[in-house]
Length: 188
Image (tube, rainbow, N blue to C red; front, side, top):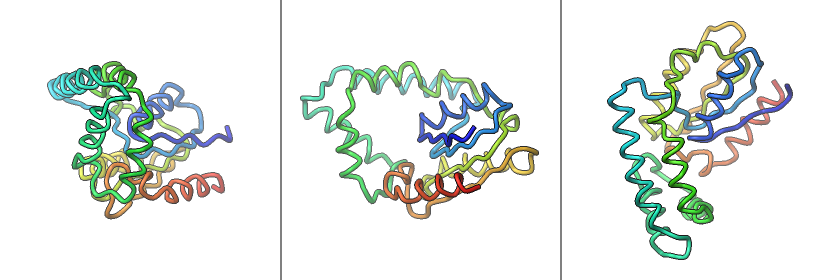
């Protein structure tokens, strides 16, 4: 009841799924870089196949190889993450992951195999903050669409926070934004 749940990217999608599995709970959740799902079945399949290709690349790497570092450097330079303020610190955190675990996550948790949650968004109850980097065009559009789905629903409060000039990893570039969101929610 008093907990504040926080998720980033895939974690925020899993959190959104949890919230929808228990729609009568009065959730307090912060979702950063969330995507409720892919609506088009062809697009879902394409995404899953793309994730399988990335998983295949990861499966051949180990933490000891510079190949994993190179993979992560390329991954974090993708347009979705740009611009970055804390790229080197983020890369050092990501290098602690195990390539085979990341590959398994892509295979088993790809948004291409997960349910489309858009039709159920208005069943949520509680207080939600959705955070998006202003330079992350795709997820900014998703966040604004979520706001339009969630606004003016009884029992549901939504606070949309757009972090100007940052991409998908905005909460890692400016962690104070996430801290402020948690504090604001705990005081609400």
